[in-house]
Length: 235
Image 1: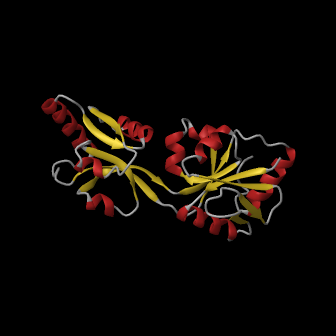
Image 2 (image 1 turned 30 degrees about the horizontal axis):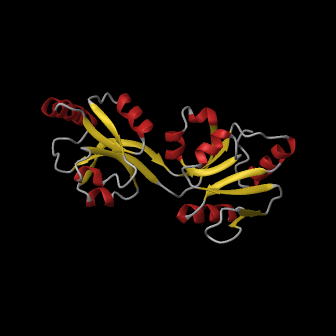
Image 3 (image 1 turned 180 degrees about the vertical axis):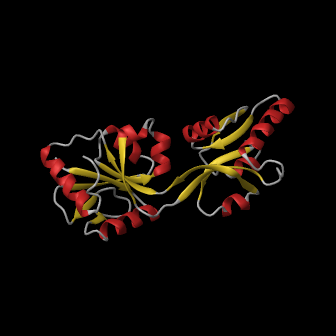
């Protein structure tokens, strides 16, 4: 057996994760070409690197297939019901920052808050005979946020492409999506509601509560966490 770490398999998240581990004396790398998903770990024995898409890592943590995983807070909280009973957030890594926000057309000059949105949604349904549509990939987080803030008379529509474009394409009236700078929202003539911040996300090291950890693996995991400066994490 060995301790398994899941890391994003490509892009800036992979590169920044490799840099974060390297700064703490652990070298992670891809074993072959960019098309291969095997990896290697140097600096500690009996640790295996698993390269996965960032969206797969919450699933593998929940299934206990990996002991540790690096992915966004947003993905863990969206994909895992009762996420904090499934994983521990061991360490925020200081990169991959993004906000999940609720945005409406900039032309809606009288809609700037969630209360305004609630009123607009009721008026929209009365005028059109169907609920105001909010496009998102984040159904759980958006639904919980709107419920907690008393917004009704809406429906969530699934977006798997460019969510910001759904309003222009008239498949939604508003969106809930991840943004880093807000530039794409502004380019699509959208504005974030003043109180429309759903979640602040960043890359985080998570530990699975469900991964089997025999005695040798527990020793290795504790040594790894200590080396990463996360020795305070409970095992």
